Amino acid sequence: MNGSIAAAFRGTGSTVPDRVVTNEWFTSFVETSDEWIRTRTGITERRFVGPDESSATLAISASRKALEAAGLHANDIDLILCATVTPDNMCPSTACIVQAGLGCRPIPAMDISAACSGFLYALKVADQFIRGGSARNVLVIGTDILSRTIDMTDRNSCILFGDGAGAVIVSQADDSKRGIRSIKLYSDGSPGELIHLPAKVTLQPPLAPKQRDHIWLNGREVFKFAVRKMIELTQDAMIDCQAMGLEISLLIPHQVNQRIINSALENTGFPAAKVMINLEKYGNTSAASVPIALDEAVREGRAKPGDTILLVAFGGGMTWSSAIITL
Image 1: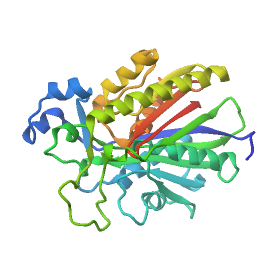
Image 2 (image 1 turned 60 degrees about the vertical axis):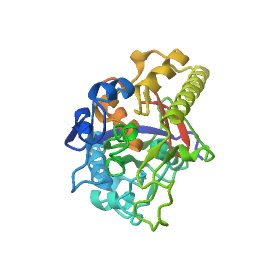
Image 3 (image 1 turned 90 degrees about the vertical axis):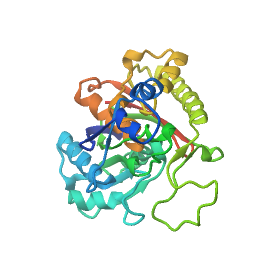
C-alpha cells in the first residue's frame, strides 16, 4: 500500500423519488397520526418509488450528479461499489446495472450488503483500492427502496422507511491533509434477529408461524442498540480526531430516528448545531441515508473544503461503522 496516496472525496450526488408520502397517508392503513409519528421518530414525510423506478435507476441518477460535481465522465471511473439490501436482481448486481446505465468501460462493479452501514463498508473498500494504487476514481453508491418491503399492517415499522440513493466519487489525491482519515467497521451476527428482511427473489421455504415476509424490527431493542453504538462511535472518533489534531466540523449520522440521535448527543456532549439532520424529509433510507445527507450538506455549504466530517451508521446484521474524512 502506498501511504502517500490519499483517498479524497471529489464529488457527491443524490436522488430521491418524486412521490412524497406524508404521515397522514398511513392513517388509511394503521391506527396512527401525524403527531404520533413525528413525536416518536421526527419524520414528517418520506419518498416512495414509482412503478418504473428501482434501486438501480435511483443509483444511476445519483451517480450522474456525482460525476458532474466531480468534473468527470463515466469512462474516468475505475471501480463501482454499490451498497444495497434491495437489489433489482440477485444477478446481475445493481452495480453492474449502474455500470451499463452510465456507459462505463468494462470495469469491476459489485454490490455490498451491510444494511444501513453499507455505504461506509463500500467506502472502506474504495479506500483500499485507491491507497493500494489499483484505482484512481471509485464510484461509491448507497441505494435502497425499502418501501417495497414494508408491512402496512405494522404501524411501528411501516412509517419509518423511505427510498433514495446517494453517491460519492472517491479519487486519488496527493494532499495528505485531505481525504479519508479513518474508517472503522464492526458487526455482530448474534443479535441479527433484531432487524430482518427476508429474501424477495430467492426460493424460500413455506412460512412457518414465526417467519415474516416483510421487513421487521424489534423497535425497543434496536433503539437501545443504535443509541449505544452512536455514543461509542462518536466518542471514539472524537478521541481519534484529537490525536490527529483535527476538529469535527460536522457529524452526519444515519438518519434513523430523531430520538436516537438526540439521546446519543446528550450522552456525548457533541453540539447539536454541528449535526446534519434531514430525516424529517426522507425517513430511513438505509444505505442511502448517509450519502444523501452528505450530498445535501455539501450543496448547502454546511460541509466545505477543508472541513473534517464524521459519518456514523448502524443497522441490520447487526452492523455499525464510522468514517473521519477531511473534505
